[in-house]
Amino acid sequence: MDTIFFIASKLVWMLVRPETLLVLAVAAGLSALVLRRLRLAAALLLSSCLAFLAVGALPLSYLALSSLERVWPADPPVGEVAGIILLGGSEDAAAARKWRRPAVTEAGDRYLATIALARRFPEARVLFTGGSGRLFGAEIPEARIAREILVSAGVDPARLILEGQSRNTAENARFAKALVANQGQGSWLLVTSAFHMPRAVETFCAAGWQDLVPWPTDYRTASLRDGIGWDLARNLDLLNVALREWIGILAYRVTGRAVTARCTRGG
Image (cartoon, rainbow, N blue to C red; front, side):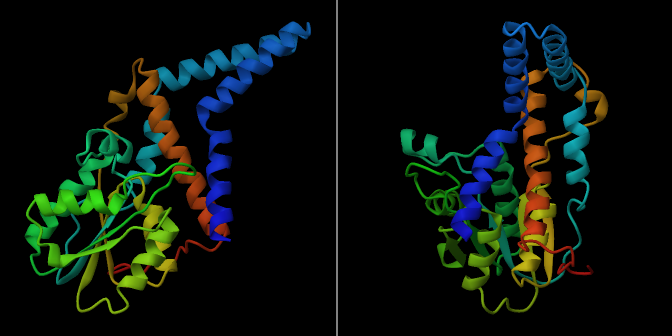
């Protein structure tokens, strides 16, 4: 069932990506034009042009993404810390394979936060969870990249717990929990991108984690004023991120992979 869900989620996302919908709308408009359905063609093509302009020039993506980034506060107060959980997904396995060195994506801020926390709490265990989210093709394991980065930054290898089989957030939570049957005394800091934190927290709660402290990082949005102006590529990328998360939250709740009951400290 997990594999079916994983494959279905990838296929559905390919179909509902904003750029896919825009291309389909343009293609439908051109087809209507060829078939001399002029009014339909005009409506589809005009709507597509307006959508391109709106996405490229207005802060629509900022609104969609910042609503996720604001759910959990940055730098929350913490007490005793048993461990730090770093969610995978910021590793660039393709680049690492080509250049034979660790590589990260735009979400590499997750590593900066984890390294800083590991130094701040030197007795805490550091758990990395992440495999590969690709449908096809082999990659360098994310866990191997994570180990190289963390150890090179001075984290003692003896503190590391590496989980490298998970393919999505639900498996991150379950597989990591299986490695830490006894959470020990203190909280576990959950490190992931701010926009991903709402789904991550709900998923870890569903997997049975307790006493989590969300530690959001990798913020992508600024003020709405900064989002006004022509930047189609950037805005489309942010819109993709936001839409994928909102769809993911809904799908996880419907399938029981996420729960709204909180398992966080004070939540």
